[in-house]
Amino acid sequence: MKVIVYLLGFGCIIISSCLILYTRATVDAFKGLLQTYELKYLSVIPAVFGLLFLISASVTIYPWVFRIIGILACGESVLTFSDPQKIYSRIIDWYLNLSEHKHRLFGIISVIFGTAVLTWIK
Image (cartoon, rainbow, N blue to C red):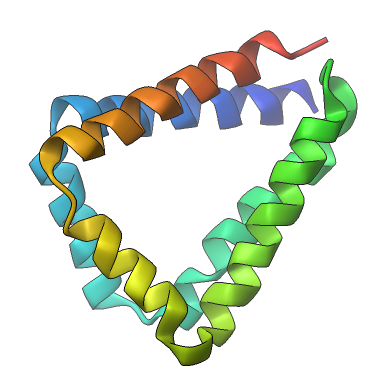
C-alpha cells in the first residue's frame, strides 16, 4: 500500500513540475489528449486515481484526507462521464484559457500537495 502512496506523491510532483517548467507544452499535450479522446473515455482516469486514494488511505497518517480526495475524484469521474449541461466541458475550457502564470500557480500548489502526500506515509 505504501508503494501506491509513493507513486501518487511522486506522480503528482512530476506532472506538476512539467506544468511549472514547460507550461505551454504541458497544456498543449493536455489539449491534444482532450481532442483525441472523448470525455467518457477519459473519465476512467479520475476513477482509477480515486480508487487508488481510497485503497491507500489506511497507510497514511491522515486517512480521512485520502478518503475525501478519493471520493471527490470518483465524483469527478461521474461528472465527467455524464457531463450534465456541459458543465465539465466549460470547466476544461476555463482551465485551458488561463494565463501561463495561473497554470504555474496550479503547478506549485500541486507540488506542495505531492510533497504533503509523501510526508503523510506512516
